[in-house]
Length: 329
Figure 1 (cartoon, one colour):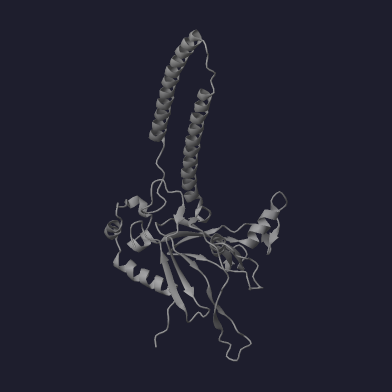
Figure 2 (tube, helix red, strand yellow; figure 1 turned 180 degrees about the horizontal axis):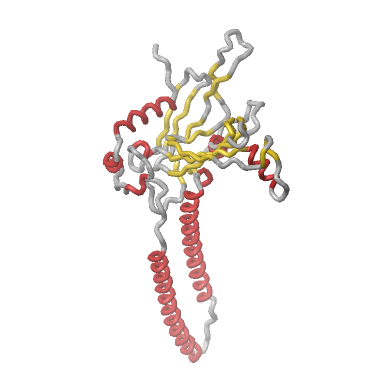
């Protein structure tokens, strides 16, 4: 009887096969409805990596040399294993990931120091950690801090909830260990903001577009408030009961209406001209990934969920929900 495969194994296997069959720029361009420019690919070599792949920047920092060098600033040089205090240069590398992992801790796990309640917290936890690696400055193995950030965003992001893990059983007879499932609930919303998970270069682009959208929204609200205020002021004007007062007031209102209308047209023309000049002088934002809108701000909308029903890692059922387009079943 064949063993049951979990969703992550199936997902990774399908994408690996599809990536081999869709290699090359022509296959990538055919996969995008509106096409994609070469400068947007940012290293994507096949359609799967262009749609699902994330270029990850990993930075390793030696904790021991960084701490000693920091304590030696502003004072006499301190010795580090017989040498001067010198910070180990950070080690930076790049890798390809086709999913983000939500690291689930806390709940019934009494040994855990971090309690994860939201998917964003779990992703942030999975993108950082500690490893043991040789330090050339110290001449021995040392503890390094690992930090990963997204350097290329895809049109679709898959997030894996790390619920299955292998638990050691040193007190058992065979010491083989057992497969376990974390049952702790982790909340997620309909929108995922990836700004905090990106490199500084990507964050600069996203922040520029977010600030622009915020300024446009504030301008729209201010214009609406000004219009409502002018309407209220017009309704509250006192009416003159005399005929002469009526005629004079009518002339003033007619003149005021004409002048305010002309001023309003001039203000609108000036605003449109300023906006056009600003757009013409503004440099286009560099691409942050293939197939993404020019005004992409780093927000992803949830459209599909796959869940595992059952307490056993080797059994249970998988269930899926997909958001249908309006007018379809």
